[in-house]
Amino acid sequence: MFFRLVTLAALTLSVLATGTRAQVQSSKSKPRVVVVGVNGMELDIIRPLLLKGEMPNLAKVIKNGAYGKLRTVNAPNCPRVYTTMFTSTKPEEHGVTGFLVGGITANTNMLKEEPIWSLLSKHGVSVGMANVPATFPVMPVNGYMISGMLTRGKNCEDGVLCAPKLSEVEGGDAVYPASLKSELLKNVGDFYIDCERMPSAEQLRGHEAEVIDSWLKRVDLIREQQTKLFAYLLKNHPTDFTWMVQSCEDRTGHWLYPIAPYNAGYNPKINSARPDAFPNQYIGFDKVLGTILQNIDANTYVFIVSDHGIKPLREFEETDPHAHMDHEKTTPVIAKHDFADGDDVPGSFFATGPGIKHDMRLMGFEASVYDIAPTILHLYGIPQPEQMRGHVLSQIFEPGNDKVAEK
Ligand SMILES: [Zn+2]
Image 1 (cartoon, rainbow, N blue to C red):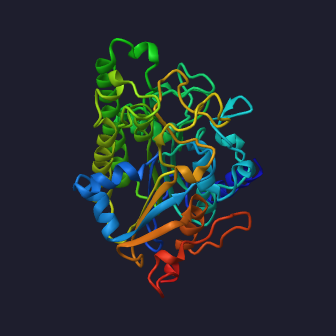
Image 2: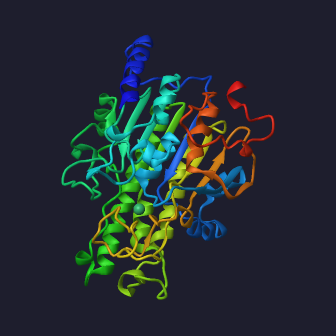
């Protein structure tokens, strides 16, 4: 909480110094970095799609950049891992240990370590964040912040994910600065801040295909709205640093992962109905990535990161202390990510931009979620704070090109 107050004071000063405009213009001298987060991006599903040419935009990023697995934390779930990425500290240190902390839905008031948006803001880097998990209520930044997954609103209970629209948010602010909210409602329209909750076993019983199809339609709508939001922000509010996140992929994987009769939890009525549903999410994501790439220039650093992957069930809830507790407890899930050993379900990392090696593959666990914040700070020439546990991914930079900010 201490850094939160300090940040607020520092930001108030910087806003006063630069005039009264809360929306700070992107400065020409600083590198532009866009981080695209995909919740639970699973390389097992993505690789076949890449081979079949169904993710052309991601294929381009791989060809012109570095990629590999991203080591995650144990029992990974979105708030736990994203906050680890924001702070480069352990979950026990930053305080956001899961969806629920002490019976309360994880929120930014629980943060005990300084997040990247605060560090960047303090150093004069303009920051834009949209739909990043665990950023509710939003915090003041040198730019804008629109919260993501775990935003509270109408009909939300602690411990259960809900999907409020921007107009339905309750219990805190979802947009900073406040004036941006009406601008978005006017120019982008009302939108879902997070992905739709999954249907329950009761809702599915006897209407499987119908419920699956209407749920997938809602997911398409949410992705459409998000694409419109991202394009609007990149065009109208360009910032030095931008972090945007998609979350429907993870949600779809949990109950529509294409599994076979051999797998635990297989229910032919659900799992043979739409086996393409989960892979199609990544084809959908690739189009969003295409829109993002169209709105930035070739000198922009693009990092695509996922907090963890997702794999078919192989541990049972009854015996596993890290059972799947993170989403609806009534959905018949057939895949999950919060395995006790995080190495069972690594995330993924893709990077491209000036001075980053081309067609470079990171083998094993060369990159971890702890390394994201230090690598971003490095691009801006900001020294890594002592508490951060990760390191700069210097191996992805061409020799002699790793002091990017000094150019
Ligand atoms: Zn999940």
